[in-house]
Length: 327
Image (cartoon, rainbow, N blue to C red):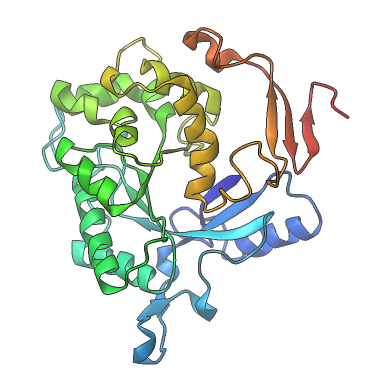
């Protein structure tokens, strides 16, 4: 499954009729993979509903997470809190090394928190973009308030990136029950640069793995393509060895086992997309979505995982990429 992280125009979308295009492709059987579409939070509007409904804002027609089928569905509401490390706009509590500044939030904190609370009240799963630790603080505070207003234990809210997480934030993340959706390939591609601007004290806090798992959190692996390469095996390799493309160790204490990294890109991704009942593992009763690899990533040297050839991709039992000659 591919999660499209924003549709309908605005910062991350391409067209106001983007969903219609996906729907037509699904109807014409031209979607080669399963797609889950996130809706940008800018589409939250005053609902005009009865006050007793407790829904101050909603997406028109009351749409929310879960509409659709196993081929094309509506996923989370995407809420942007800050920028990114590459542009030095991820919102930090302490300045960037060498360049200074603490990044920026996308709006006033109160307005951003209100988006999170109102999206939660409208029944959405939330995908909250928070890269810097200041943005993570804002996300956690707003999610706590949202759950206080209406307790939804099965919401599975996501924090997209969790790029810089202080030690004191780890237990809060676990207690909140959020899913950290991380992009290990960022640190493979940009780890040398990010380490310099974070400094020796904070570099080990970036895009954590071990610390999340040790607290019982479900970690989902993501690419954020096209910001970084989309190859999941490259990310699996990084999670296990924590080496940048320049050979720099980036937070080696956050290394995970290869099996754990593979789980992030299979079961973890399915869990984050609320599809783990039908996806994420080769199990009786689940959809037959799988890949055929040229070698076993659990048995080769970790440094070779990214180079393993993908021989076939199967969706619903049908090969959609077939170098292995499965047909």
